[in-house]
Image (cartoon, rainbow, N blue to C red):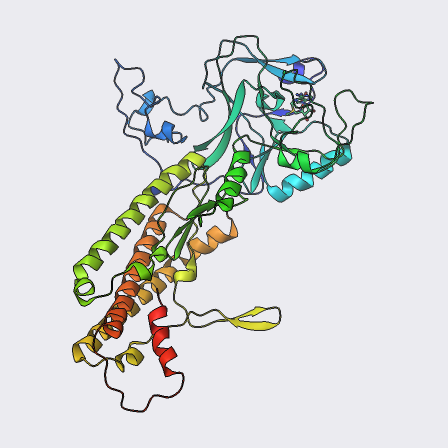
Amino acid sequence: MDQQIDGLPSYIHIEQNDFLYRKHKKQKEEDIAICVCRYDANDPDSACGERCLNVLTSTECTPGFCPCDIYCKNQRFQKCEYSKTKLFKTEGRGWGLLADENIKAGQFIIEYCGDVISWKEARRRSQAYEAEGLKDAFIISLNAYESIDATRKGSHARFINHSCQPNCETRKWTVLGEIRVGIFAKQDILSGTELGYDYNFEWYGGAKVRCLCGASCCSGFLGAKSRGFQEAHYVWEDDDDRYSVENIPLYDSAEDEPTSKLSKDIDSSKNVPRAKLDHDNVMELDIGLELVQCSHSEAIDVEPLNSIRMEDMVIDEVKLDTSENRNMFLQDTHKKLVHKNAMISRMQSNSACRNYHIDTSIVSRVSVPHFSGGKTKNLAQKQVEAKVVGQLLASKEAREEVFAYENMKNVASSQLNSLYDEIRPAIEEHERDSQDSVSTSVAEKWIEASCSKLKADFDFYSSIIKHVSVAPRRPREVPRHEGENEVDMKYLEMGV
Ligand SMILES: C[S@@+](CC[C@H](N)C(=O)[O-])C[C@H]1O[C@@H](n2cnc3c(N)ncnc32)[C@H](O)[C@@H]1O
């Protein structure tokens, strides 16, 4: 239909993303977020309106699973419930899109559709387009690994121009397990007004496009505020009023830039960060020995288990003998972890990338030689053995307790190892395609087993500390040799 509009460059009109280099994800039933809305004919907002848990986390309801069934209003991407818009020819900026009805602030306008491609493919294509002499940029970043290319096919969103004072913005939503980008109104927009959003250009280099958005705060160039732009130097060609493009730029959805800033802010703070965002918009949460990675734009404060400072622990018989205290502490920590995990999984839906990273370093392994720069590196952690510690202890009960805890520690370790073997295919799949998520149930099992191992480790080491530092020692049967004191001290240092 568009092709009939005079002078409109040819492209294929689509209203769903096309997946070329991988398949559309299959949403696992256990990963479907189900809201708690109930349809009430007297309350128009009842069926998945603003209060819907899924809406609040930018996740669309899944047909067949939403309690509001046909009344669900939270399937706008799926049902292409776009605002009314119209193509028009701009002065000097090619084609543009304008509102063809009054649009309310926050209203969904249209989905940005195109080919979902890998980052590498985006780079390859942009170079190919450049070689073909294509000047307009249509590749938008979806996340750290993928982009949407609307150069050859797309929706009307591909015609929305950049504005330094935008009335629209991009937002990412999770729809049936995939991230999708929508254009939303930032403010009330009157019918007939041109739609624009801030491209947040990230340039590969080369010349820049002169911005003709006309805003009083215009920065002069597309992407002039972005990091990539400031680092590059300008090349201005006046023979083209609109632009000179040596390399086709990629532009980024507005959400991504503040994230890298956040990473910088956190990193530069004088406190050691508990949760940090890296340059790939991936947040690493250090929860004890386990690393959970998720993509999100807010930092979460997670108390790492290994931040417990031993200086702060009062080591006396009364305190440490009450294993109830210890259990309470660990149960509490476990609860916190499970709670955080629930939050993480909710927020991942929000940022549209459920991306559990299971850090397998917690799995106890036989020492494996690693090669680094021609030298082998032993990465196995030093282990404290109960039989060595036992030699220091005078009381039989103390020795038995340490042995019992060691046994529990070994059981927890081997349970974790066998769980790892069980879920290895899922982890390997996840590592091969970093877009694919490890399912929530697997992640939960993993967290549970990891917590059990941490608890067993904690019990074992605290039992050693209690007995070695407080209880009477076994008299030495053989004279102490030089350096033996240091060995005793090492036991106290290890595992804390
Ligand atoms: C996604 S396309 C927008 C549709 C485009 N106007 C068209 O006719 O196909 C992006 C391209 O539009 C042009 N453009 C968008 N916003 C502009 C602006 N504010 N000033 C100058 N050119 C702009 C640039 O060439 C940019 O690469």
